[in-house]
Image 1 (cartoon, helix red, strand yellow):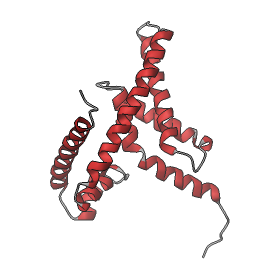
Image 2 (tube, one colour):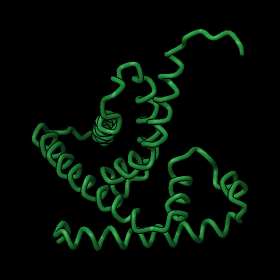
Image 3 (cartoon, rainbow, N blue to C red):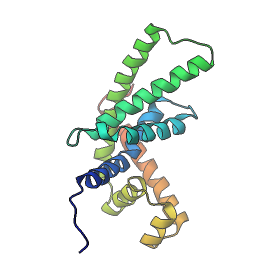
Image 4 (spheres, rainbow, N blue to C red):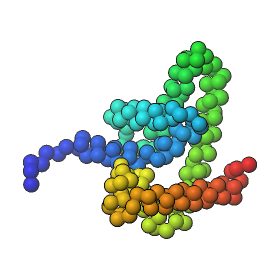
Length: 183
């Protein structure tokens, strides 16, 4: 045993990194939903992650990490839009600001419904399929590392992932239609 100094800071940081990693897929989906078709979405996701990391001391352990991260993401998206508006010599009117804020709240609800549908649809998958998706999207492991670990070819895994994503997307749409969420 080495010297044991109680270092709760590094333990907290490890927990934080874990939560941030776990949040990557929802965060990515959230930002992309707020910026449909905008190629800058991946930049905004990067900025959001940087900002989350810079603000990590502000996070209250035990509170809802995802809600906190989403609030930062929403702020970064608005920031990006304002920057674009400035670049285009356009100004965001207060009215538009309010409309955007309202839309974001509605989107939030839609996203929560989609997330709930995704959770239910995940349950209908075989355990190994679920594990594949979780390993692929909830860990920092590269596809090559993952394929080596499970002893399958990268190509084979890509095909399986594509099938699973299609299956999940169909399942989510069906659930949303069934709950009357989609017109």
